[in-house]
Image: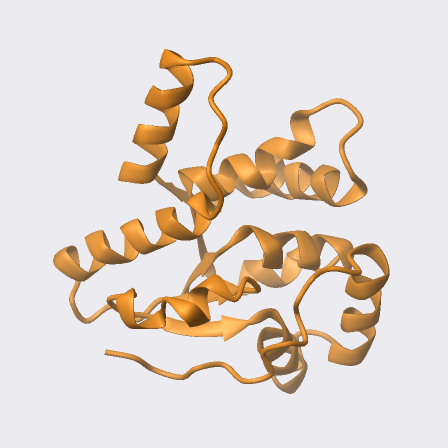
Length: 180
C-alpha cells in the first residue's frame, strides 16, 4: 500500500460521493491541521452530511489513519491559546502538508507519498514541495476506476459536484507524476 497524504478538499469530495472507503486501500495520513479541517468538523452541531461522514469514517478507522503533528499546527494552536479570537489565515492545511513533506524529506529521502489535492495552491507551489506525487481528485477517481476500486469515476464526479458545486475536482485532469 502507498502512503496517501490527503488535503481537506478531496476528503470532503470523497465524503460527498460516499466513497471514503476507497481510502482503505492506502496508508492514509493527514496533518493535524487537515484533521481539524475535516474529521473534527463532524463533531460540530449542525455539521454538513460530508462532515458527519468524515467523522464517522475517522471513528471507525482511527487506528489506521496517521495524524501528523506539524510545525504549522503547533503555531496555530499557540496562536489560538494566546488569542481566542485569532483569525486563521488561508492555506494552513496546504502549508501543514508542505511542512510534513519537508520533515519526511529529511527522515526518508526516498519516500514518494501521493499528495491528494484539489486546491490550485499545490500547482502554484509545486516547486517548493520537496517530494511526492501530486494527484488531483479527478485523476484519483480515474485511477480508482481503472483499478476496479470504484465502478465509475463519472458517477462519483456527478455526486461530488451535486454536493460541492464549487469543488475544483475537474480543473486538473492529470496527476503530475513522480517528482524528486
